[in-house]
Length: 360
Ligand SMILES: *Cc1c(COP(=O)(O)O)cnc(C)c1O
Image (cartoon, rainbow, N blue to C red; front, side, top):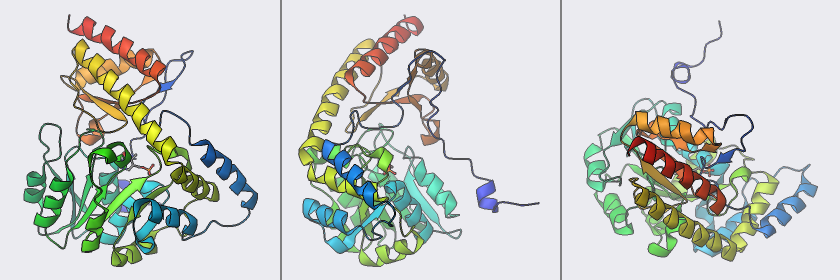
């Protein structure tokens, strides 16, 4: 009999969005935190143009893309690694820096892929409680164990949408053990950049990594490009576990062009924030409990898992798919991606109707 490795056999598959809706209904997916609009037209044009060289392997060191990243974010060229989405970078960090003899720590309601990556590396996954839907630095410090090797933290967080300040991140780094690798995942960083100074300089300490992605604010989720800033010694180890030709020609070309069109990305962030905040106001008025969001999604907190399930079903009946949050330890919550105005209106109509029925 063929047997999978025991740590793989005992894992559940990653819970991807279930996008099935009743037949005859148009699918409205608000489930995956995708951008509300297509990529910058420049990115589309350059990705298409890159296809003429499609018989050749892509640049394994992403030089064109890295040099624009380096200029745009004022980061040393040599500190940048690019991934097939930031998910690849997260998995490679776990592979390279944790194993069955140690542990990975994350906030209790963190991005579920941190746990998946930890399981792939055979390490133990520890969590620290959050407070009022927000990452708690003190709880993370208390939850550190002698065998903790990596601390993963998304800021702003997914699925909570909340954020902690640069000062809190700095305090976490100052008070954590120096030999624990801190990974700050800023997948939604562009949506909050106007509120905060960047944290890229923490990478200079040699034990901190900052990740970003083109999947959210830049709208390139389907092209799979993530990136991060790494101390040299960390980058050297990560490269060993990465696919050496990880980002397609089209992906590299699109990401570079998207980066060169900052106006388009910033407009996307402003449009998203306006729709998001109107949606939050409308739902709070209807009686829903939602935290403020600093991302392109909002979290709806219901009474319990049963309510969340019933609301999910009511929405699916109309073709609307949100994301259940059991995997992030929030079975009473549904996450709504900020889509185009018509789709959000449609969701808000169903949500208003539902709450009147269950809490008259
Ligand atoms: C969406 C998301 C990612 C994954 O992004 P890709 O670059 O598409 O792999 C990583 N971290 C968080 C917190 C996310 O929400």
